Length: 298
Image (spheres, rainbow, N blue to C red):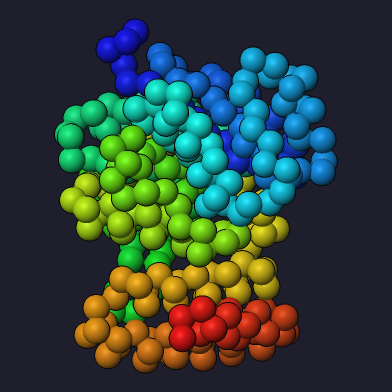
């Protein structure tokens, strides 16, 4: 048993009582022989904490008492895991279902090369079980866009090759202890959520670690319970604001010859689409995201 690296599963929760209990039921069925599950609660008011104590009395539950955001909330769990001997930590959303072999498949790849630092599985929409939500991540420094490869495509085997990817999603983020000690954890500048996973991935990649996509590891995501799912004003604002912070931090000077043009064109197209749909709150949120980013950056 001790030949298997100890993995801590950190599940962050905020007012997701029913989803969380379903997720725990799924995660606890994973077949990897050496893992612990830790729930970090970000100040829920829906009885999530009591539900965990009642249904899973042997699990560790950390109560933050307030919403620290996705990044810092997970950081609390990561610190606990490292202090208790974790060699690897996997961060999992509270609204997922996993294939029992998921962690085993991820760890098979994780330990195959010492340069591997962060991994994510193949992820489908829960409501459309053969449709991709994530099949690897893409960071385009010429356009200023961060995106999921394969999103909304039906799985026909086109993304079945394991290999390096440009970023791992925080929805299921397996990270080596050494990476945590070398480059740190999530940056709270991305409070409350979005883009912190790309930032951590980029820091790890620049430190020499490989970021891997593992298609044999499979998971289903019930999608953005935090923001209500889909394109909401909150999600729009945060994605715009945090993506600009990310590219200001990591893009080279020559990328800025194209990024403003691409962002401008994408913004114009997006605004026209939302006008036609009558989504004026989304448009307001878009420009609020730009303004908040500029205040932080300049």
